[in-house]
Length: 104
Image 1 (cartoon, rainbow, N blue to C red):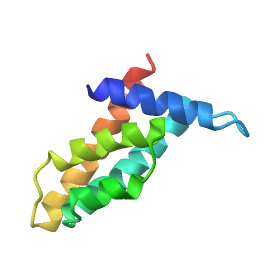
Image 2: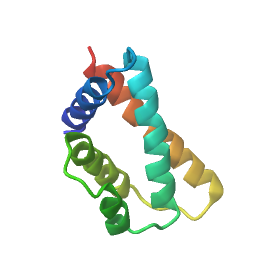
Image 3: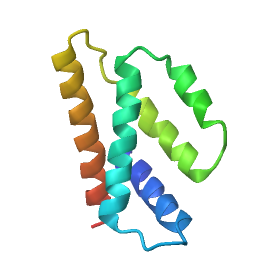
């Protein structure tokens, strides 16, 4: 399921950039950056509904990002800074790993 989500996001992001050549590493790095923001919001207690409302459109990228957001909200919320930081880092790495694997 995660692989399908990231393949969709990868293809949508790649086709969205006509101005410059986008590499696999660029796309995966951007997904990683976005996943940090998503998981940080989750760890800070931002409601899932608020995150989903922020997408406010029905594009392919938004639909795939919805699934990434849902994956983040399946993870537990921690109270210590150390565990929050570890969870954010792990989520980023998971998203980037799936992205790079989807390209092969």
